[in-house]
Structure formats: structure tokens, C-alpha cells
Image 1 (tube, rainbow, N blue to C red):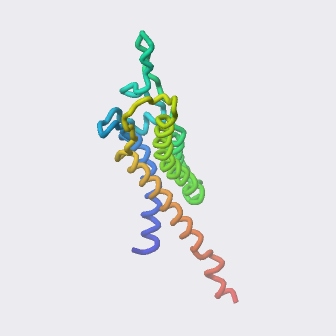
Image 2 (image 1 turned 90 degrees about the horizontal axis):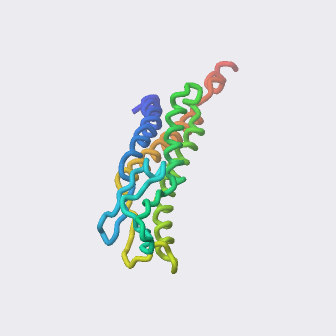
Image 3 (image 1 turned 90 degrees about the vertical axis):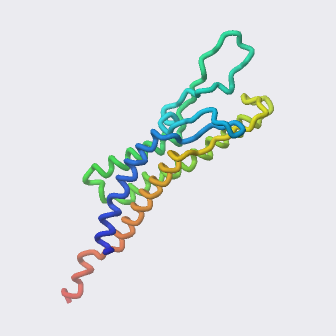
Length: 187
């Protein structure tokens, strides 16, 4: 494969990866499991906009009246990953920004890092909630977040988009400038 052909292919990896990553937010990102049984499945879009769990595991049993299930706030890491996928698409659609590979690398890289931090945030948040003496999770059950296919698909797509932009940036920097090509003929 020639350099021109590989560059043409790489130029489509980033916007396609960002578009597919954006669609991946509608897939299940994580399951909340208790001793191997799934209690709740959460999509990426639910993490972005905040979600209402299917099961209220922190309900206070002292209340006589049933209360409405708590609605969790949007996760900042999921939100950052989705915003970076959207900006990756927008940068491609803007003709003047198509060859700004450094900017595109930074945007998709932020999305990739945010997606990786999402898993750490979810797992450490659950661990912290269950480990405190007077924690909101007073159970003897093992609760875990298991990351599902939607999460991994978005992570890989944002990583591929970042790598494609970095490779395009390196190819652009290594390309000889017109004045370097014709320097021999000027002398």
C-alpha cells in the first residue's frame, strides 16, 4: 500500500470512528452485578444524561411511604467522551479543520482517556460507597460494575481515531516541503 493510499484510508478512520463511537453510547456500557446476578444494565447515554436505576439498592427502610428512586447525576467522564466524539465529527465536517491533525488528536485523545477513566470512576465509586463504616450500601453482598461490549467498542473506536490522527500528523510533518524538493534545481 502506498503512502497516498494509506493516508486516504487514515483520513476516514477518525470521523468514522467518532461517528461509530457516538452510536456506541446507545449500547450497554456496564452491568451492576450482585454475586454474579445482574441487577441493572446502564447504557452510555444513561451515564451521560444521568439515569434512574431499575433497582433502588440504597433505599432507607425506615420510611413508611415509598420514595421515588434516586436519579444519579451525569457522569463527567462519559460526558467528556461523548462530547469528544461529537467534536471529532464536527472537526471533520469543517473544511478548514480537516487537516488539523494535532487538534483532532487532542480531542479524540481526551475522549479515549475519559472513557478509560470512566471505568476507574465507576468501580472506585462503588468500592468507596460500600467500604465506609456508615456507608449507604450496608450489605454483605459483593456489588460490582462489569463493563460490557458498548464500553469497549467506544474505547477502541476513540483509540483508533486518536492513533489515525497521530499517524496523519506524523506523515504530514515528514512530508517534504515544496522548497526542499526544488532546492537542487535552483543552484
